[in-house]
Length: 264
Image (cartoon, rainbow, N blue to C red; front, side, top):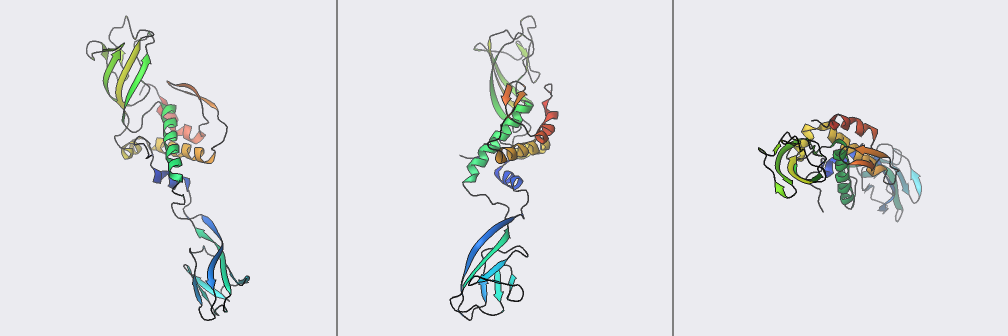
């Protein structure tokens, strides 16, 4: 299952954000380089060790650098060739690559990206990547029916109790819709179906350029989900949805709060 097109960040961005320091160290323990033959002086490691981290052993005896050997990249060069059948092992730190995740992590990360995007959208009442939305609402007796996702680009259809309404005769399209019949308003307990499009850009890149703070907020929520998968949750109130249980990272909330204005 691939990442949804409406997710605000992609898999590569998520991995790069979670792996904050691309040069952080990973530990290699007891790597076997081979057996000495009395003449061969050079042996290759699987990875280039970070400076000062290499511990090299011949027959279990720790060797010293540069007295006993030198290292260049992945290649170890002994001053004196290890004797016949002497096992050579090494332990060291190596620099992590930009992507240290296993392939089986991808599905988990994709689901977390989508969850983080949804939580940011629910918190702000926004749609980041433009999509078509069908919203089922019950009239509340007021003149203005405010839709749950903004910014609204088009309202394509409004249906009241199964009857398609006219934008010229029945309601005004104010990007949140208001009935022209002010004496009636959106009658209570009558089903209103609104089909509309909302979002900041047709592509992920366009949406990210339009709301960069939201992009960072989604990455912060993703990081929180990834690092605290069993953490406790708090109750927060989300416009149009009500009270839900989720502990929003404070830095993410600060970035998203300016988008919570219900009038724009």
